[in-house]
Length: 296
Image (cartoon, rainbow, N blue to C red; front, top):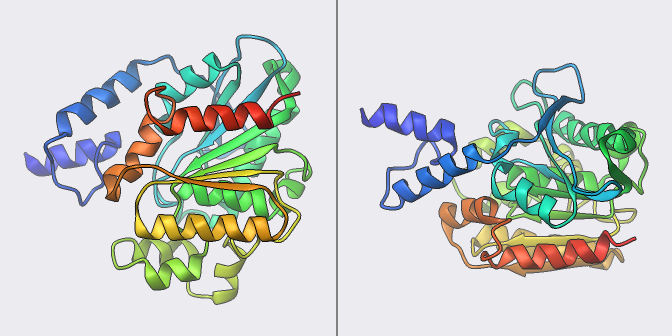
């Protein structure tokens, strides 16, 4: 019974597979069920693979900016539904269109291909902006965990956007949420055993490839115009966020780094789950920053 429940909760995104059922479980299940009941965006395909899909929420007014979300899951799991509930509703209420992207997963594809999926999803939305009712010249990108790494990579190595044929000015800004692999080789060396095999599966052992896939190492200009890097109080996530911000500012790219309460996996999950809740401290910070970069 315990094993069955654990697998069920893992599928729902309530618990990681190795976690034990804890005291806050009922609250977290209730939040997940509430999110599942929220209005969903319209599903669209930006490629031929079954995972190359996105959910799209129309803005309340034509010509609004768009916020695009990229989920986490260790590069090998996760789903666009991890943006359900608060985010879609909140950002539409703030005057934006909103989209949540799926991408192909390791080991069936590489991290390089995942980053290209993100760029291709962005390009699909921009090319269809007029039909979808938003302003394709005002685009912001948000990603959590592995998604934070991918959005930071797309925002620092602009070759992915170039291949997608939207060019370096496709984005107004990037918000990575509590990533811990902006410097891949450092994370593998210092990150401990918990995610070590996951990092090796995603990034391999070749130092040059690890460097190419490290946003901190790719932070020399050109970059996306601005970054807001958010983290909770995890040692590796904090250190990696600060280092990425420093590398971007050294290159002349505006980058703010802000920390919030929350520790361990619970805090890591919370910054994603609660972003969009007006009472969560990171939400007004993100709202103010988006308003500043997405203004006409």
